[in-house]
Amino acid sequence: MIYSNQLNKEIYRPKEVSDMIGMSLRNFQKHMSENKIDTYSLESGHRRITKDALIEYLRGLDLLVEVDDRIDVVYTRVSTYSQKERGDLDRQMQYINNEVVSKNPKNLQYFSDVASGLNDNRESLNKLLGLVMENKVDRIFVLYKDRLTRFGFNYLKMICDKHGTDIVILSSEPNDKMVEKLGE
Image (cartoon, rainbow, N blue to C red; front, side, top):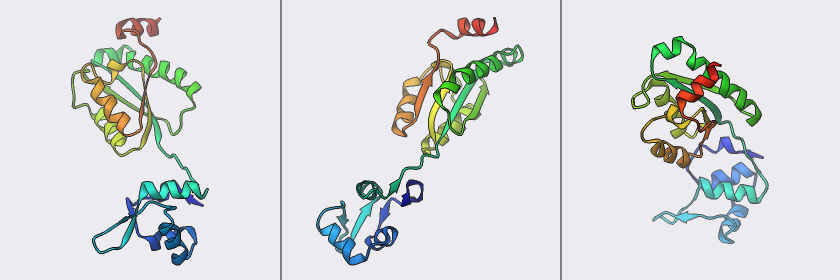
């Protein structure tokens, strides 16, 4: 069995693959000539296998064990320190925690900022986006979309979609009403 998180190269040589699956190079070359695995040729005539083609091939042989070690993230934000001091950030976190439990979170991590939603240089958001672009985040849980940003949400969503990260918005109510509700 080959674990998906062990496949850390983008291009493989036929000998690497044959060793990986415990098959002789000659038999593996036969698989390649029978088009059982997609390959491409270099100018020199040597063949190579992309990671995606290898994954598809291993799945077909039932040799691939999918390992998803990506994390789920709770992201909270308030605009001012006075909002944080009166407990708005904690209430957001508590509300999200209560909702996330039913969604089977895995490796849950927390990120929060005290900054304007228009500020595009927030420390925790930047760290979170870095993890997203490294394909390490499965889901981001936020109370409402303006917690991530007040402008440009669609750009963030496009980046997340490209890297297989879902943004889970737990409420569609405007933030002032939700904060009042949470405070009750």
